[in-house]
Amino acid sequence: MSAVSDLAMDTLRDPKEVARQIISWQLDRGTLYMALVAVAAVNALLASAPVVLLEGEVDPTARAAMPILALLERPFALFAIIAGGLLLMVHGLVWAGRALGGHGEFTDMLALLTWLQALRAAAQALVLVLSLIVPGIAGLVALGVAIVAFWLLLHFISAALRFDSLFRAFGLLLVVLAGLFIGMMMLVTLTGVTAGGL
Image 1: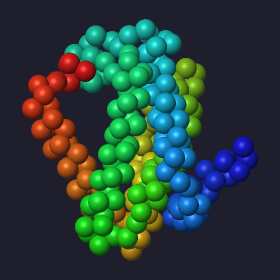
Image 2: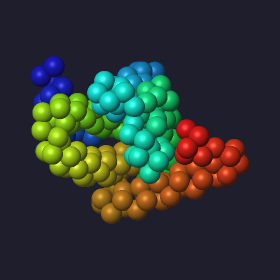
Image 3: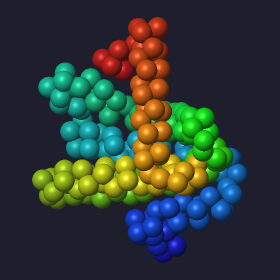
């Protein structure tokens, strides 16, 4: 367990070096897929925990403003979205990254983003505990976690694709997110599914 906590601390101190270390493990796809399923399940449970354990349902006013919050009442659907979204993100980053001159393997990106999701799960557990004790501070910590996670993501993308700067990683991320958003809108248009329908 100490090895995992040490790796987590090293990730915050020197994310690019830790990324190289994780890539050097050369984990096979089967192992990475199992790890992805595990971290997606934990993230889905932690995201749904405040609703399932404390309130029982999303506040109707909040649901009316953001219908997507209804997913917090459906951990299995949330798990599928997290796992599927992570896989789509990995594929998109690798394909688009290669098109932009990057050099990296699918398994490298999958390993790094899975580790990032594991760190996010740990941070989410901390935020959940804080929300029970000091709700005001929990919101600030959650914001800090989001900023740090974004910074780590840029380093991981850069390391996985052998980019020479974080600006290239940032540009790639914008391209991929825009592509995923457009694809999602097209899917919604073709199927007639709406956020409220989720």
